[in-house]
Image (tube, rainbow, N blue to C red; front, top):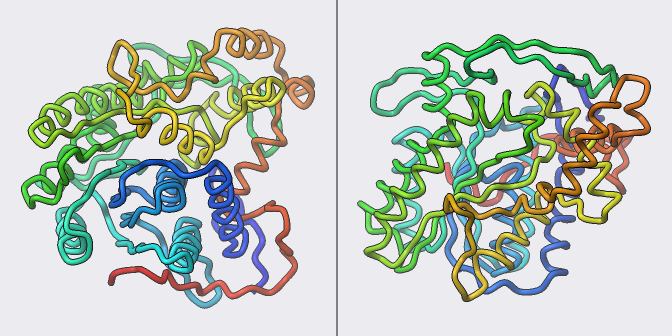
Length: 397
């Protein structure tokens, strides 16, 4: 079929298999161009099919020649219907990994569930024995709690008071004012239940109980802080409350892993275009301005550049891991440079529908959004008939 983007709000209902594959190949080539990383050899990535999780799997495999298991929840294709982009990403990654002689298998299902945890544990026992690195990179709007059966839904809201500020419709470029009502206590608790650290801890507990954590095993979860411009709706909002819980969980897991010489970290990453960030009011406007400034300064990074730098310059250098005063790895250091933030703040004041095309990089934002789904990728003929039904080589059924 000939596949075109069908966009509804902050999601695209279609994905392009060849575009997704080229995105993966581009990331692989970047990692290989940066040289070998003395990283772990047996890696589990929970949330492995898109964004930072996908880049972590690519960096592990093609930077350190690691065997990788990926866990994700993606929609498979059917004749006349495309898969979700993470399906095509995973298919491309595993194809390239197998061509390179690397072990790569995956499990598609609800990573919050006990069933998927057990299936993953069985696979590790059968194929790898133990795991050296666990990356936790889940992003989901909903979680069915495995112990209680309660369905928790997350919300993107401020806490305490109404939040009003600028936002942009990144499809039309229209800048407008938005007001968001504050979350109630139930909404806060539900968001923490979905996006906090409880499930990360459940994974580590299950792996430890099954004796699958190798001596010195490390686990890393991803977080975001951002600037004062976005803090009311992000870091001081419901998502921020969940991230606080995630970061507190890292200390508890680190205490658990001491007996095997391991550790747990939260890496605070840079603001980037993702399906999740596109849904958060004001974030698209902030990121379009941030992209403009960071590209002009020559310090812009995407997911793969961030994770390759995290691995090669923070996690696996052979010396102590540098953390901030709250124990977090700060790979958002370039975004949060004072000169960068000062420029973004000045542009924010001036940003309107009329001025944004010049002040910001909305075109770059749109391009990155489309690339999430395999569109607007250089070298792909989108008028060509392609096979939408693509199999994942290492998928464990």
